[in-house]
Length: 135
Image 1 (cartoon, rainbow, N blue to C red):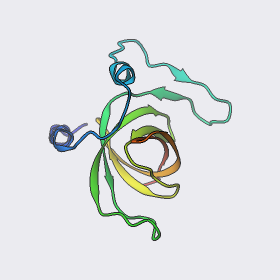
Image 2: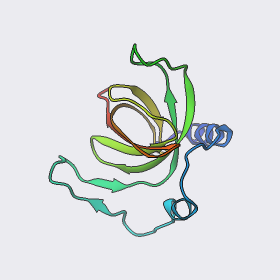
Image 3: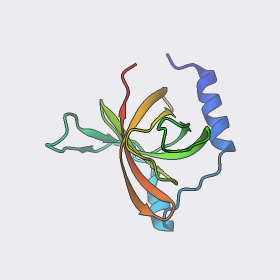
């Protein structure tokens, strides 16, 4: 069962973070569009599990996990894109590198992930794919 304090903490942290992700006005307008129907699945024969659309803001707790990438621990606003049984996709304002690990505070619970890929969409918007770490 979800702890009410967790959701309050998530919302408090989200409210305190600067949203630095750059999307066009049209993209921003439609990105979080409320859709009451079942989220679409994205079948892909290369993947073991189908992805489901998940469009909400979340928090990323990022710290140094690779010796060659100097990072100070910080919390960041991210936009979730999709989720599957083994991974998650999201947007972030900065580039992340394969092998980096971070904790994501999702509305349902927090999860540890390892970055798998990162693709630049615009100057301050990167499309990131991550795999859930086994805990």
